Image 1: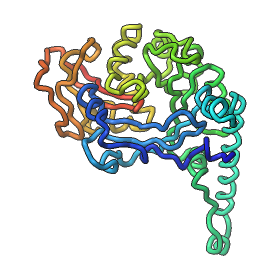
Image 2: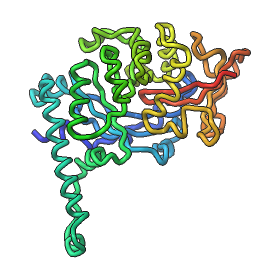
Image 3: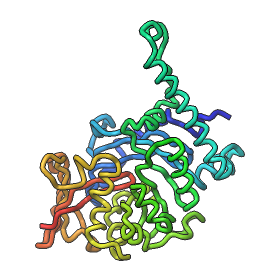
Image 4: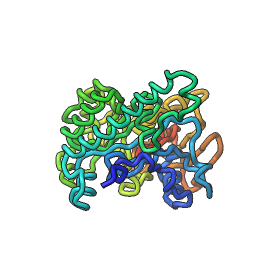
Length: 346
């Protein structure tokens, strides 16, 4: 078995984006989503590189890609890689220990390559002129992660022992986890996650669709926030459509998350988590002019975008909506798994 099968740094989400996907227009017009971090799937222990996109109407993916963004990686643990490889193919990893072992194995390879690169960088001119700097396309993003070269790491994990395993490995190899995704058990160790400054990109009320989700709680965003953890409401598009992102923030508010935090969970917090908080997710001078005007307060059920502005230009206008005096303008964002429409009350 080749390690590349489930440790695929050669895999990049950008290579699979369909700019003509009708869901793109739905996200914009029905959900007020203008930007997304598109993560590769969770069947592999290391899924590959993510893509940052603006949801522009275009025939070309290149016109959707955001410029001057960090690189982003996706890891996964638990039942997904176990089922794909252990149960599905009779291959490793077939257990949680196997997932951890494969992570350590490839990270150790990356650490060894990093050492060889450092040695080459410190070598004399003759060596550098006559030999090539050590390189591996498969390992290169992980070397960047170990060097802390502005690589944003997002990890798909549900259960406490999986979350803890990932934190343990991050300590062993000295890299940062930016966000745990799904993370339905994270509320059980909320203070630990808060101490590590890891964002929890989660759902408001998804439950029971697999055994890892049996301990989910509608109070999870509330508990995490009260413990000081950063909570981002996410989609799992197309399993849970990104156009419904604000609706899930409304539900988190209904279940106890305070109004401001519910709004931040789809604006400033996800923007900061993916490394773009200096340009999207808030209404500030110098930020990208992505705004949504809602027909009612965004936390009211049925809130609908009346006007969507992207990069200062009108992208969508719904003539059938009436804007009342309690309208809200909001900066919009998403991570294809996380969005952001909202912030300052007018």
